[in-house]
Length: 262
Image (cartoon, one colour):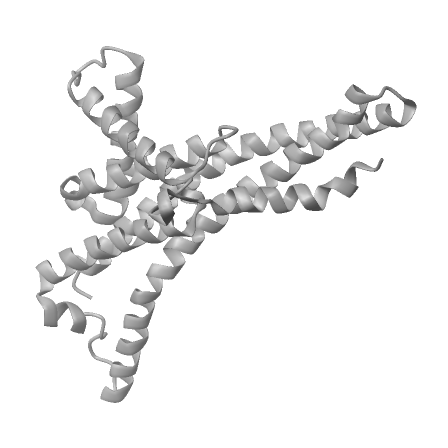
């Protein structure tokens, strides 16, 4: 039997799995336990390392956490916020670690990435939006913050107000772009990994169940899919880190824009 005949049904089941299923009467989904687990892991990581901070890291775990702290402060915070990065470091570090751990946990077979659902990425974006808006209002005042999106010196005046409307729309659009970018990258990666895993299984199974020349040929294709799966796993590790970096960096940039004189 041609393994491709089973592929459509397997992909439908994969999509249903990635979509998440309701739990406890709809108040949670199959992603919820992983979100709670990741929150717990991030808290444990931060507080475990914090209690052991020293001039020379006492072990590799603390050294790795210090690397992420310094990376977030220097490569993400200071690149956008300069000297103000230290003030926003707790928020940026928590955001970065949550997304990174979510992405990495999601690569483990059988687990789910919180960032692979639009609900989680939208919630992260709303938190980011509220954060930089709060500091923008704190810096400029409510009226000043709203008017800060109108570029000074634009003539005629109506053109300046038109640009202001475009800037406000662009600012609100961040709710969509931030959430969709992270979700789309993670969901697409998990979908591709799932399809390759299904193809590997479908093409190797005939050799296990009934040895024949045709099944040997199928197994050869299965090995090829397995190699592609391994390559994609390596790629997903890279994407997991990059997406955590991009989301946190953009949040840092938005904080800078909200609190700057522009």
